[in-house]
Image 1 (spheres, helix red, strand yellow):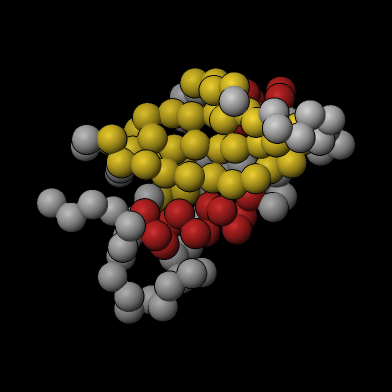
Image 2 (cartoon, rainbow, N blue to C red):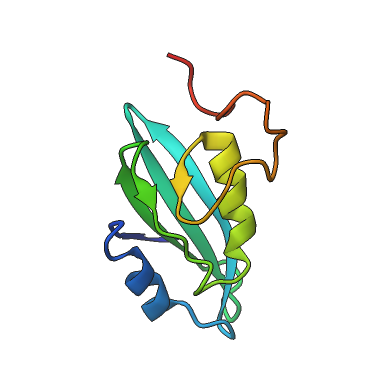
Length: 113
C-alpha cells in the first residue's frame, strides 16, 4: 500500500491530481482516533493492479471541517455521510442522519473519555 500524506488545504487538489475514474476505484473513507486527534483516510484501488492500494491521509483536530471530495469522486458521498454519523466529524456539505436515526448517540464509534 502506498500512503500519501495530505492536508485539509491540499486534499482536493492532491486527490484531483491522482484520481482517474478509468484507472482507480474509490474504496472507502476511514477515520481513526489517535490520542486527541483523528486520522482521516481515503482509500483507492488500482484497476490495472488489483492489489495496489493508495491511501491519502491527514491528522486533524476533531472540530476541523474536512473538505468533501464528492465533486471529484461522486460515490464518496456515502463514505462521507457514514463518517459524519459514526465518528461525529464535520465534512463539508454533509448532514447527519444518513446511517443513524437523528436521536441516536452522536459518534458511537468514537472512544469514550
